[in-house]
Image (cartoon, rainbow, N blue to C red; front, top):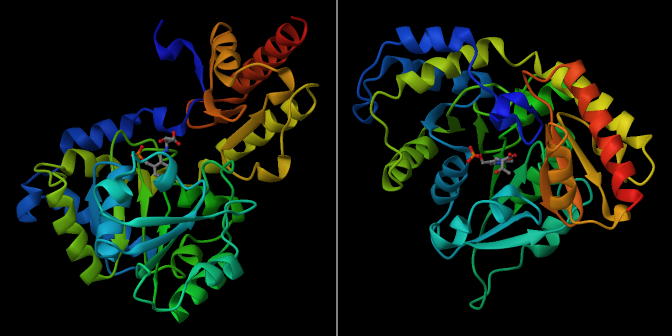
Length: 351
Ligand code: TLP
């Protein structure tokens, strides 16, 4: 069975390109981007920089590479990086922060994914011969493992002030920053103006097949371009990726509101099912995280029971199961998923 026959709620990364993207790819003007000669990549990078209110941008193949390149371009080996303890960079990027960038991650717990500025202040220690140099504070927006929660512009401003007052740079993994902007109904620059630099992904809710952008000052992006090359991410006729990215930035942002409505509908339905735990306050964008600990089964068992009913979800550990809405998931699919969840809960509870 192909995944097209499932209601696939594992991630917004499963979105397929739109017809308009495929057309744009077909007609893209191409050149060798390592020479800076791909006009479509150049256009996308300029557009991304303008949308984010920064000087420059560079296209990379994935969010993981975007984070790694940004870490390397904001620090030197041996530096200390402060990040949220469930951050994607810490959990899901194969330890590249240490293994490749040579950095010491310093995780800080938070309630909803937004670092408490006072906690950041506490972990920045004074200069001392024994200590690694603190160089960077990172935030993730929206915050994946916290359930797609938004770190507000006000929170960013406060964290950024602490970082800046100690001479640290401030970076945002903005893989889903447009979800944050749509959720609060504000321009994305309201978020980006508080950070020195950031990355965002084209290949998640925006429906592109590939691609993320690293955005910041000209100096930073020049270093990022070089670090992208170190990692083997210098691409040649990358206009075939960029063409879809331009369509995404121009046409795919506002529709994220539909994904948010569907996630809310799913969450409110799940809240009515006995045996499931759900924190509705965390359902702010396109994600719903269920706590199934009360059912006394492994999360992988729950997701395979759901799969047998045609619904795919992500087992994310600690008794949690994640559902992500996206383009291609309509209300009827969400209703199907809700019915399947209800049946699985009732079957598992009566074992
Ligand atoms: N997240 C993926 C998985 O890796 C978990 C997902 O399905 O949500 N930052 C954040 C906040 C992310 O959520 C992701 C992908 C990345 C970075 C990495 O992006 P890619 O997958 O393009 O390397």
